[in-house]
Length: 297
Length: 252
Figure (tube, rainbow over the protein chains, first blue to last red):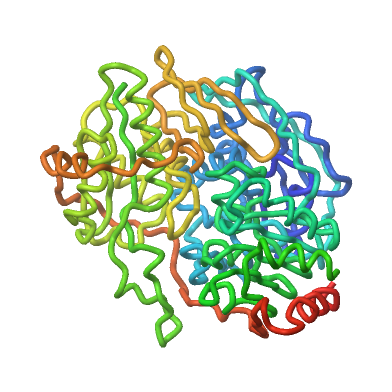
């Protein structure tokens, strides 16, 4: 079986190439863009694509389609970044199919993804061309990547009208990587004022936790960085301990913490949905509970 | 600028229940505009307002059941000039390719356009793939993740927040652009907007499209939620905080 991997970051490239081996691939080819550093022993073949100066990575559609035609893979595994989603969509069109997105698990060729934000799990099989956008961690880490990393430059193919990059500024990350945090405190709309978040921060200090939030706090109120909101379209976490503070427990949020070891909930509304989905809950206003709790810890 | 917003009409996710057979029960769910498509409509309305003489048309493809008066008025009360629904029951579970093909066909009836704006992803699949497939079908450039749109001369300047960088790009028109929810907060239509919406042009017509599902559904089931202890107490209960804190420490 031949697998083609599309990834723009080395970590994902290595993970997907390892995943290809776990699927039983005897040939793994990777498309590498620009000067992306290659993890050692990652793939058999690396097709190096140099995007012309001033053009965005989205313009690589025709080039990736040409690599696909050259390699003729059985399966394409794709890192689910914004750029790669465009290349995957264009490739799927080229291959006469749809990419199966945000795959959490692959069992043979049957891919599991969330449907309606996790309200159901959808299992699907690809048609003649299998293109999967893989969620991080979907393959586990049982098999390591391997291969001679033989590099072959691949000529740029003109995509027609082009998207030009005017500027590219690195995003200053908030510091805590919630994906790696053992303990996460999540704040919701129960926090009426931005300054109330200091109570959550005090709890984080006690628990050595990362502070996350529901979508409205990041997107609407903009009190916390957007990369810290948890749930559909945001982070999917599996920490040891999850403290849901002042959030109601909407399905769209809770799918993002369903894999947590132990869930604690604080909400003034005894009927809040979060109390049906937690291990330990305390009914009370965060204004009352958080200072008492910080004091007790 | 002639703007078309491609939206999905689907059952409201807030009304979904788990059926006895482990399947999703849609019987209590009414049709709504997919949540993030409202942000796309608002972004289009704001972009149109920034350039005199612009038009905003909303296009949706789906089964005949999407043709509901309330849904149409909701769309047309949001700064939208005209609405086009192209229906075919074969589109009930359409994947990205089938949706993009139906949209590209239906676009021919909408007339000339400069840009198609899509939402971030639909409530059901949230695959973020229709934008790219549609652009490929139409053979125009595609940019996703837009957080700011600015009309330029024959182009749109897009700011997009990606995973590690904020990229500002110049997109030549015609093009397909998909927007993140933060691009614009959907307006709350006034009663006057809703009344005026009923008088705007609505074009609803069947779409002759060969259903071409390329991905096979094997199973769709409501997952068993992770079992939880559900030990709930009230803050005023004696020792509530102490016992909550003790459980917290024990779990670390």
